[in-house]
Image (cartoon, rainbow, N blue to C red):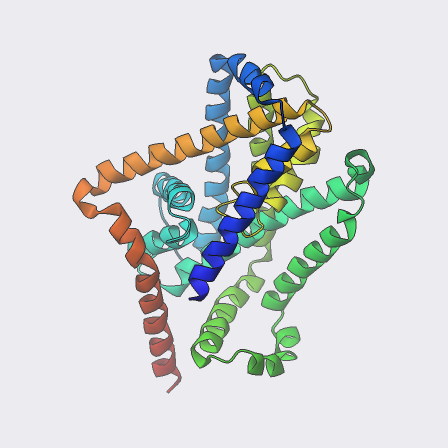
Amino acid sequence: MKKHLLSAFKILVSIAGILFIVFLVKNHWNEVVKVLRGFKPEIFAITVLLFFAAMAIITVRFGIILQVQGIRIPFRTLYYFNGLSLFFSLFLPSAIGGDVVKGYYVYKRSGKKVESFTSIFLDRFVGSLGIIALGLITILYYGHTLNLAPLRNWALILCGGMLLVLFFFLNQDFADKFKFLKVLVPSVKIREIIAHVYHTLNYYKHHKKVLVRGFLISLVGQVFFMTVQYFLARSLRIDVPYITFLLVVPIVTILSMAPSINGLGVREAGFVYLFGKFMEPEQALALSLVYDALVYGIGICFGLLYLFREGFRSAVVHEAMDMEEQVEKIEEEELESGKGEQE
């Protein structure tokens, strides 16, 4: 029931974002088409290469984090797993998360259960820190330019919250002071899972250099993704300074984290509203549409690769629907083995 309510809420948020776009653009749809007609495929080709390069950078980050857990998987395979994560996130958002798919395949390859999934959590967490850091700098120093002063306090709260969570995971003495809060979690199973994940992540406190490297790699990766969108704008003959993308893209990315169907509607509304301060609304909408086409197109490519590698009889949809149940069984087995060791 809760899953259905959450899915319904995500759909409503995405619809609200789309309606907001319609309100902003209003009678400019013909102008949007004109912008799209100016599309330059040769520049778009450069954009595709840059996107694959950005994926390579975040794959390096993921590999470094996995190695701390003693999981060594070839770069080529990890890159493929990241592609699968993109595909499943885009096309099966309500059934399963892309991170769960990636974690499941890392587990199948490594044989390590909870370590695979907690590594993915930390990879996502470190990546989010990079995005938020860039967004925070933008809001604090350029918020007046974008008229984003009201977001400053929220940005500080979000950044402070993530730093607190990171400090919590890396400082056992500090975390022990909050043991009394476990009574707020009614399910014993959930408490055990949280405790197990905490102890696994706490392991990284002995590898702070890995966290720093991951954070720096995240910054580089985000700059590449911003460059992707800069060249997308150039492919539509939109001429705005590169610094504009350094200012706007982190904020759009943070907004896309809101509960929605993989950021659909929210991301496009962010594009139109924020980029609309530096270009015409129809140009901003065209840019968001081309970006969606790029991401979904690459996701489809990885989906087709998955079908050919795993075989059409592997039933992608059925495997995806079973994935969450498989992950729960993995966690239950790990918890049972942990109890056995303690006894």
